[in-house]
Length: 234
Ligand code: OAD
Image (cartoon, rainbow, N blue to C red; front, side, top):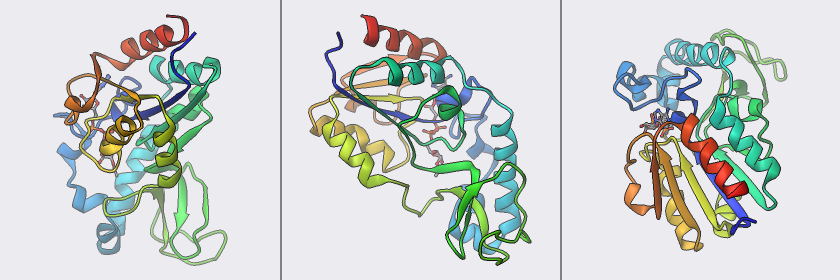
């Protein structure tokens, strides 16, 4: 019987690394090859939409062709078998949590396999490349179709729900994230304020490592299944 009732899990790019998707801040990561201000801001899209769409077209092609790894599968198992509430909040825009079977999931930075029309606000599933001359199927306008992802300078999605869960959780897990990007990097503080036990599972110490009560370093596909097994049956 677990000592916990309510788990909040925050995940980042390190969780999907062993599925073959690049992280952002590792030496060969995405931000070593692209400048954030060129590809991941509203200003970049206004200035040069082709470059921004091309950057996310590459991300979309990558995300379509990968599979969930053992860490995604273990987290889906945790949600199914844990007797209490499990909320997974991911910074990842890939679909690997849901493909693994996680249901109570918040994509706080959006989803690469969806579009968002800046003219009418319509959101829809989308697997192909986006182009600047794409016409919105709902409002008929051109030039406003963007990936449904959150850019730097924009508010992440569903923050009220996330903070409600953090205020009630008694276990907070941070997995595969470098702790560089707020507000996600501050979730550990909220969880501590709620009295939760806090655990970092990451390849290396994150920026916020000193905020965690327990720290486990290693590969996600090894650490996460072992940790889930311990939580469920330990
Ligand atoms: P980062 O690239 O900043 O951090 C990934 C973390 O995963 C690093 O600390 C790695 O050490 C760790 N890691 C790498 N491989 C791993 C493995 N196999 N197992 C476990 N850990 C591993 O990615 P995020 O923290 O997710 O936002 O980045 C946060 C946000 O910054 C992203 O959502 C994105 C980015 O800019 C936006 O684009 C808005």
